[in-house]
Image (cartoon, rainbow, N blue to C red; front, side, top):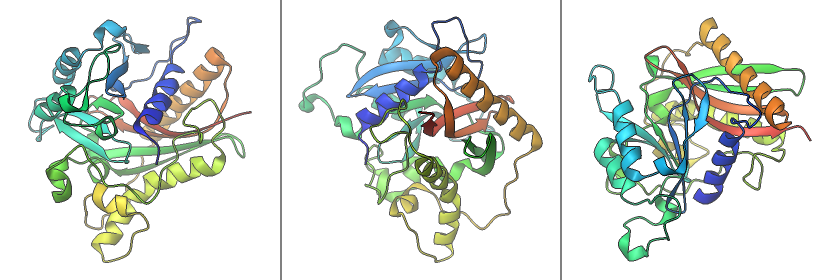
Amino acid sequence: METPSRLADWWCSLYTLFLSNKGHKLRITIPDTIIIRDGQLSAWFQTTDEGYIARLIPQHLTPEEVLKIFVRRSISDSTVNPNQYVAIAYFARHASRLLRREELEILLNEVDPPGIPPRPLTQSQLSNSDLPYCIQTFTPPAGDIRFITTYSMEEGASCTTFARRFSARYTHAGDSPAAAAEWGREPAPGGSPARGSRDGGPFHEAGQEEVAAAAAHQLRAAEDVEEAAGGGGLSEPEEIYEEQPQPKAAKLEVSPRDRAEIRRMVQAMVSFVERSHGLRLVGMVLESVRGRDGAMLLLAVHATQWDT
């Protein structure tokens, strides 16, 4: 299992590739994304009002500012966001938890701005290993749908997208009895999804098998849950805990509009990274959702493969 600090480094280095000192701008939409490393707020990436990705200056990286912005960006309309979630927290043990304001506030009380000496354990309820490595603003996904896309150059450029239920993957700790008491602590899984190269960084080739493994891990979620509900077995016990049982449902379709927008997003990312940094992406697994305002948001990049 990869440690929170390695995952934090991987996410931060990857999102840094979406920036450029050559004047290029990557125009895609992301939620406000905060990287947490060793109990400190490490980086803050967001989409600006002009529509391109930027990194906020360190002075903004305070728990108070993060809470203020996350609450400001949250949707209070109970018909759209009935549970009043404000954030998604990503933990190293592969759980992705939805947080309400009070839970986000508790979490932010456990972290510090950059440059602050580490706290003694007696002053903190959660150890660094129990903290998430990333938190994002929560955007209610249209139709409760998340999209998993695999990009590959193995046999010419291809971009394949599948749809899955968002609520089957992203849950609140209270939805699981085992997690209700300790929402920050997750059971260790039997396996680990690919997160880029084996050393945790995106600058080395992951290998096509790891990209395929990451895609399979993301796509298997809802299917495993349906199998569990029907009495079948599971290959990864983590998925039982992470996903909520759902009844059998018809296959979710990806509309031509969604497919086209995701393809444009992928092409923009691949082109930008090559022009700005001279790095060529030949494989990638990413996750996206369409917000209620109609914008397609990049939630996460789960694996990358680089041309050597």
